[in-house]
Amino acid sequence: MTEANKGTSAIELDGKDLPAYCPNPAMPAWSSHPRVFLELSHGGEAKCPYCGTVYRLKPGAVVHHH
Image 1 (cartoon, rainbow, N blue to C red):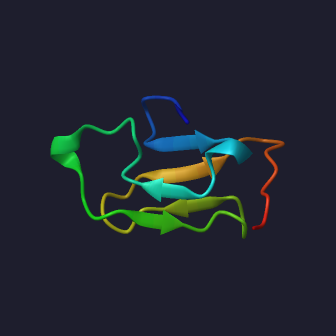
Image 2 (image 1 turned 30 degrees about the vertical axis):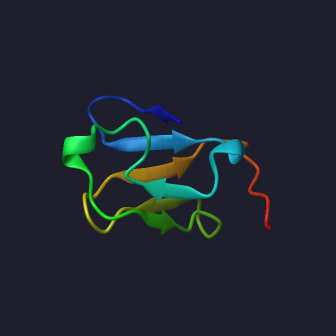
């Protein structure tokens, strides 16, 4: 997982980072909320309902269905 520009709160994910969830491991423990899994296979982007962080698939990332 890599953070995009500091001007946005979007996190870019690769196929190996799936399933996507928030809070992600890079977030500090003090700011955590209940873990939620995010669906990125429809549109390639999802927003956390708790903190508003946007998760986006990197261009060319492949979503593997389990």
